[in-house]
Figure 1 (spheres, rainbow, N blue to C red):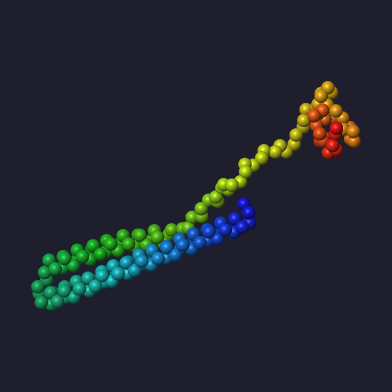
Figure 2: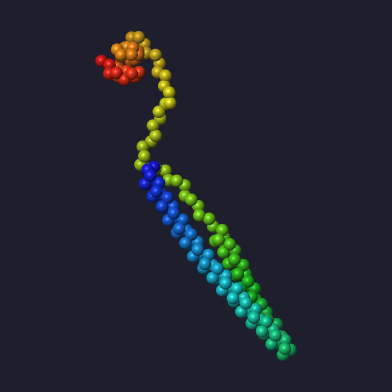
Length: 152
């Protein structure tokens, strides 16, 4: 992989991470706004319940139907609040996952080169000696594998 390909990949990953973080920030901000709105609604209903209960209690006419209606609304809002708080925790806990490095697609397959090679000794009938170093080589060789001299 060339230097420019590495730089390009790193920039691309940086852009992907920035997009992820911006999306995460937007989602968590939206969920926090919804959570705050649910809390405000709960507070409003609790204040209304308290005011009604106070007024009814002072008048001596506590009506269980209206108190029950407010309590039901508060229970529904609290249930929604718990769900949103769990959703917010999950969104805040998300972590950017680095993609695995891409395999090069245009590269040639790697050659299999032996680290050491001990050729079998040539038979005297099919070999010749190098005129410079005396190395025994196949009779079809054009260069000496020992010293590199052109033979023939």
